[in-house]
Image (cartoon, rainbow, N blue to C red):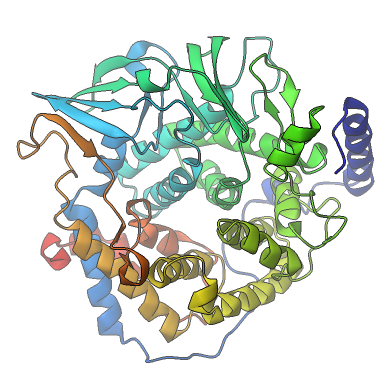
Amino acid sequence: MNLYTPMKLFLATALVLCGLCMVSCGGDDSSDPAAQGLPTSLDIEYTRPDVGDPVSDEEVKAFTRKVMGFLKKVKYFDYVLETTHGVDASTGMKDWQFWYNERFRKEGDKVTFFHPENLNDGGHNLHIPLSRVLGNAIAASLLTGDETASLAATQMCKGVSASMLGMQFDENDDLPHLMTRNVVAFNHEFTTRDGKAKAVDYSGWFSTYTRWNCYRYPIENNPYWGKVWVTNMRSKDDVPHIFRLVPIVRYAVEQGSGDMKTACSETLELLEAFGKDIVDSNYRIRTKDENGDIMIPGYTDDEELNAQQGDLASFVEYMDFMPEGECNARRGAELIGYHHAVNQDCGRGEPGAYDSVSFNFNRYNKRICRYFHLAHIANALVNGDNDAATLLMDGLDERMEMERTTPESQMQYTADDWWRNVALYYAQSASFGYPLTSEDVRMIHHYYEKAIDKYNDWPYWDLWADSVADGETGAYRPPNCEGSDDEQECWWRVEDMAQVFESCWTPFGNPTSQKWVDCDIVRDPSQWDEAAAE
């Protein structure tokens, strides 16, 4: 294994920067979508033959009415606003909200969101659900102008920013864009916009720990929030989901207004710097240790630790053996950081040896590879890199075929867990030009509707309701599976329940795709009937 040294990093960075100058210096920026304005349509052609039982317009309308009735009934974006937390504006400090999955307790008219003591874990991969909820909130705001969705998007954009700004050690720290796994600030109480008493109690995470894949430690003089506790080493688990979020954040900045535009502008600036930093660091994700010193997991002076950390924060660990492996991740970072390719040419980005080997080693790598591919397509489209996007779409179709034909014995997940994840992947891929078949549509409808049926009676959509008893009740996120082994049943997670907004907002829908949602209904709140959710 090649060990990191400061000299090697210096040389690698210098080579990358030289390459950048050859690519980008000496010409105008007329091909840069940031200068031209973002695309308003899908400018590539890609088709698939339809298979499966055709889905009628009436079925699509009925499905859409059920989804929109449900979102209205549970006041979905109110739930998002009320259960996310960070630092409230009433403190006089920079405010933000983040999607945590912790616990709550109710005391009379006050609800406290608390983080139970956890001495070696806590909040490791929260950017995955946050990215999904935030993207859908932005889409809902841009599509319908919904004020609650706009406020949720504003606060969660600030939350993404806080996950980077939180690791600034003081006002002289000039690297605000290195991302934590999570950051928590201080305990406080406040009143929400609609008069509810809300408190946050982070005390359970006010402790240090050291694991092979992250450290938690305090920062005493953060320029925004004073003392904060952070978990470092942003592993690549969340990064493809963050990368897939970047295009819609760009549209929030270009097409949004007011506080959402302002908040997401800061987020975009930080995320682009994050992507650029990965490229400039030879496709590795840098972090800071408890002393504020820069480190790269797996590339330290400790050979034993390097062996443990492996490719935790690297897109190049296996390049010597499988050079095509993780190309989607590397080129995606280039498109985010520079708005054009720098060094990488991924061709079709199709699954290769790396995908299979990494999946066998750790089943979670399947989702990492899936989403780096989709994020690559999304960022290629938004940057007008259409030749690459066309090839990548063909590779995505090959990837989808592998997903469809994987034997249950090789899934490493229960079958229903596997297929609900594939169903969501279909819907999210359709937002970036992948054409769906009737069979795909029926799978999306099945897992989306099953979620509505399961969530209809969830008692904690409004934690302040009289029906919620006092005391420590438990989780404020509903379960998304029940049973185990061959008997397990799963449905879409709560963070994905507003996916219809992204799917109807997107400028990259494929006109040859089979229709899975009626966007006329999604755009028109007068057609949202709570009774349709039952």
